[in-house]
Image (cartoon, rainbow, N blue to C red; front, side, top):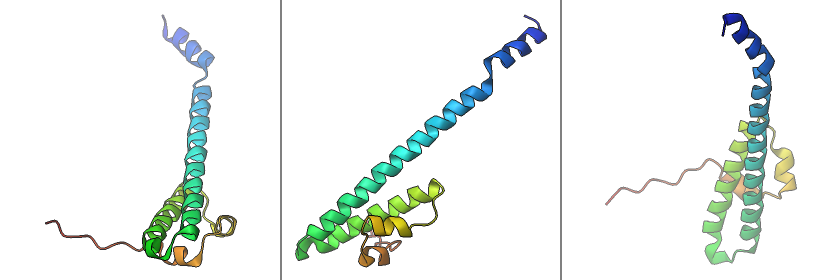
Length: 109
């Protein structure tokens, strides 16, 4: 096979078609992971609303973690404005106030 034949074969295969297919697959994965993260937030908020007072700190921490992970995922997808989803998902202020707060690390025994 000559160089010219190789170039003709490369042109015939259209490598940009493979790139487009890969980009579509990546976008589908991003959308899927964003949907899963949103579902986790909805479940965590529902659990927080239904939690008895005794287990409220644990459910609040779970809700904060789910919301933080969701916001990070949204930002990785290019969505920087969260106000609409805060309203749509009914994320309470006490969850938002604790975002980014880290639990102190325990010293190993």
